[in-house]
Length: 221
Picture 1 (cartoon, one colour):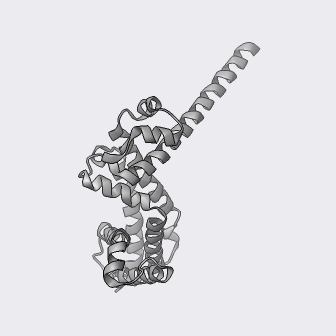
Picture 2 (cartoon, rainbow, N blue to C red):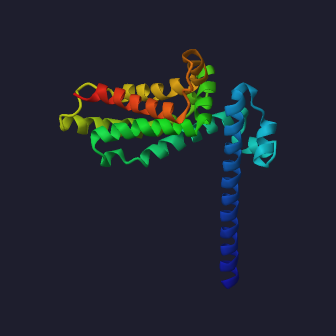
Picture 3 (cartoon, one colour):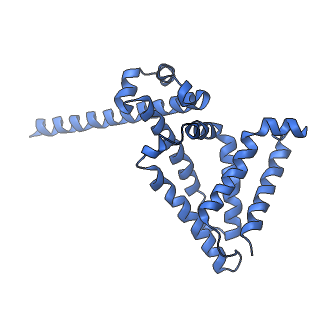
C-alpha cells in the first residue's frame, strides 16, 4: 500500500512537472513568436528564428501549434488576452463615470506606447484580411467583457445625468483605439510634415489630454 501511494505521488509529481515545463515552453515560444511576427509580419516571420529565440526546436513548435498559421493565431489570441486582462485591472466599475472614460483613454494610450508589437501584429493581420482571427473560437468571447465594461460605465453616466443617450460602446471603443493608434502609427510622417517632434514627452502628454477631452466632449450631456 505504501509503495503504491509512493508511486502515485511520484507519477502525479512527474505529470505536474511536465505540465509546468509545457507551459514554460509555450510561453517562451509565444514571446519569441510575438517578437518575430511584430518585426517581420506573418509573411516575413521565420519559424527557425522563433525556435532559436525561444531556445527550442521547430519540432516542438509544430507539436504545440501544428503550423505557422496556428502559431500566428495563438500569438494574436495571447496579445488580445494580455490587453483585455490589463483592462480588467482598471476596475472602471468602481470609478466615477467621467473618470472611468478618462482612465480608459489613458490606459489605451499608454498600452499602445508600451506595446508597439501589439499594433504591429494587428497591422499584419489586417493585411491578411483577419483570416487567422476568423478561425478563432475565443476572440469574440475574449472581447465581450470589454464591451460590457464600457456599457456599464455609460449606463451609470446616463443614470447620473452626466452622459447623453445613444452612445454605442463598440463605436466608442473603436474611436478611442483609433485616436491612439493613428497618432502613433503615423508619428514619423506627422512629425515631418508639421515640423514637430510629436513623440516628445510634452507632445505625448498634450495628445493624451486632447484625446480625453475629445472623448468626454462626445459622451457628456
